[in-house]
Amino acid sequence: MEECQNILEIRNLKKSYMINKENSLQVLKGLNISIGSGEMVALMGASGCGKTTLINLICGIDKADSGSIMIDHEEITKMRRSKMAVFRRNNIGLIFQDFNLLESLNVKDNILLPLILENRIEDSEEKLKQIAEVLSIAEIMGKSVTDISGGQKQRVAIARALINTPQIILADEPTGNLDSKSTENVMEYLVDINRKFKITLVMVTHDSYAASFCDKVILLKDGIQFLEIEKNNKSNSTFLKDIYELLKRIGGE
Ligand SMILES: Nc1ncnc2c1ncn2[C@@H]1O[C@H](COP(=O)(O)OP(=O)(O)O)[C@@H](O)[C@H]1O
Ligand SMILES: [Mg+2]
Image (cartoon, rainbow, N blue to C red; front, side):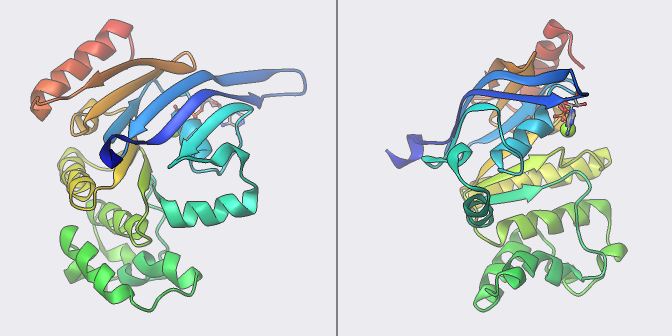
C-alpha cells in the first residue's frame, strides 16, 4: 500500500570530518533510519551529535563517506551534484533556524523565490493563496520581512518550503530562534501542513516541547540511532513526559 511505503531509508550511513591534517572526527558511525510517507518525526540528540550533519546529507548539500540514503526509492547518495540539485528543488523543502529570508524582498517574493529562480512563476497564484491561507499569512504578503515577527518569519519560510510541492520537508531547529509562544504556534502550523498536504516532515530539534508535536522521536547518540519512541494516541503533554523520561534515562540534555 502506498501509505506504508518508506519515503526515507538511511542505511549504514557514515560521515567523518577532517579536523586537522592527521585527525578526523567520525560523526555518523553507521546510522539506520526509516521514515514512512506522511510521518512527522523529530530527530533529537545532544549538541554536536550530528543532527545538522545528517540533514545536510539527506538534502544532498554534503556527501556521506559510505552508506546509502534513499528518498522515494531514489538513491541520492549515488546522484551527481547537478542531478541532486534538481532532485532537491523538486522533492525537498528546507527550513532553517534563522529563517534564511531575503530582507530585500517582501514576503510574497520570498515565498515565490524558488519558482522565480526556475522561471515557473505562472500558475503559482492559486497555490500561493492556498498555502498562505493554511499558514495565516495572507494579510502580510506585501510586507517587508524586516517588519514581521519571528513566528511570522518562520511561517513565511515554511510557505517557501512548500511552494514547490515537495514530498518531504527537512527542518533544522525550526523553533530554535523562537520564544515559547511562537514555538507552539509554529509547531501547530507544521502539524497542519503535515496533515493537510500529507507531507513528510523530518525535524531536528533539541527542544522536547517542539518534539512532542511529532508522531515519533528518534534519538541520536554516539553516531547512531540510539532509541526511537512513538506517540501513538497519546496527547502532546503525555508524549512530552515520555520524551523527558527518555532524555533523563540516557543522560542527555
Ligand atoms: N564542516 C565541518 N568540519 C569539521 N567538523 C565539523 C563540520 N561540521 C560539523 N562538524 C563537527 O561535527 C560534529 C557534529 O556537528 P553538527 O552536525 O553540527 O551537530 P548538531 O547539529 O547535532 O549540533 C560537531 O562536533 C561539529 O563540531
Ligand atoms: Mg545543528
